[in-house]
Amino acid sequence: MSAPGQAHGRAAGAARGLPAVLALAWFVGLGAALVHGPLLTIAANRLVPGVPVAGWAGLGPALPGVLVLSAPAAGLLASASGGRAGAVALALLLAAAGLLAWGIGHGAALRMAAEPPAARAGLGAGAWLAAALLAAALGVAVQRGRRPGLGLGIVLLVGVGLIVAGRAGTFAALSLAVEYAGRRAALHAAFVEHLVLAGGALALAIPVTIGLSLWRRGQDLVGIVVGGLQVVPAVALLGALVALTGGLLRAVPALRELGLSALGPGPAVVGIAAYLLLPLWRGLASALRAPDPDSLDAARALGLTDAQILVRLRLPLGAPQLVGALRVAAVQAIGLATLGALIGAGGLGRIVFDGMAQFAPDLILLGAVPVIALSLVAERALSGVEDRMRVGAPA
Image 1 (cartoon, rainbow, N blue to C red):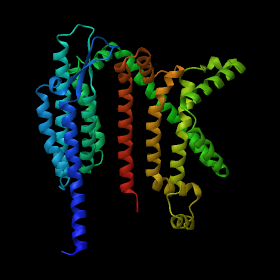
Image 2 (tube, rainbow, N blue to C red):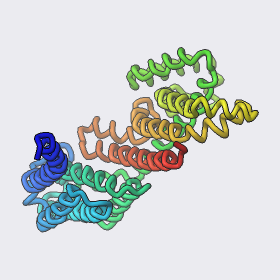
Image 3 (cartoon, rainbow, N blue to C red):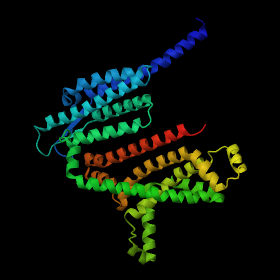
Image 4 (cartoon, rainbow, N blue to C red):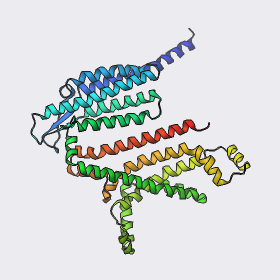
């Protein structure tokens, strides 16, 4: 074989070997997290640091099962097989994740049986690392599956599985479940408030973005303003809005009768909406530029008006960009709504900041985990819509 051929063969071998090396490193990392990493921490109460419990002592009989299921899954993901291998790997990884969740709950229950009532069993670093590694592998398996909506389906399946297991008492001994049991009503109310804050900000930002886009001569100024808002810290902007709203109420007291307040959801919705203007404005501008000049000239030659070109040409061709901008704005709104609690707007941020004030990590997680779940669901759902639109869009 010639030198170039040998070099090409070595390069191809390295390219084929890279996934295998990554899969091996993934499995070794998962094994280290499960065997040596602290899967649980046992604390005397909810405020003091816990004593770590290694995986081999906390997971019990579930440990070998998780490893046995994960090993062939890693091999399948490293292979060059098609979608069927990805589907089998996906099933194995879901089974491993379910077994890991059951093992952690069962191990916590066994440990807490001999502890006083005030003791708490928390998740250790090993549990979080193992969950992150399994989630990453699930993401790779979903990509190998190449089916529209598969990612969202997996997210919903995992969420429903955790809810069912929680209602069955699988995680009753974990401190996170104990916090939830004590704040169930408050968490549900905060969840609804969070959705209202994020949805309200998005509903406000969309028409404002459309209005700004209609000001054709001022697009450079609009870009400077909406881009400049991104560098303003969210806490500072919310504080400024509280001060401005308070000054407005002092100048026009009649506004109080309309329900306007310097604190609460009003300033929070306005502040969150301000940060959503940039992605929405850029997405709308990109969507309007989607048709090529020849298509626009042909449409005008056929006698279409600007409004007809917008409805029949610009918006259909730019729909993927619009949905992509909406996806970014929705995820951003869900995250920023957490800060609304700082000015009395409620939401899941209230639980997060309560946990920070009490130095209670599990209470912080109780508020943070739903925010992460909401963001994942919104991102996956809108990504699926965006992908379908891109596939159906004309080349």
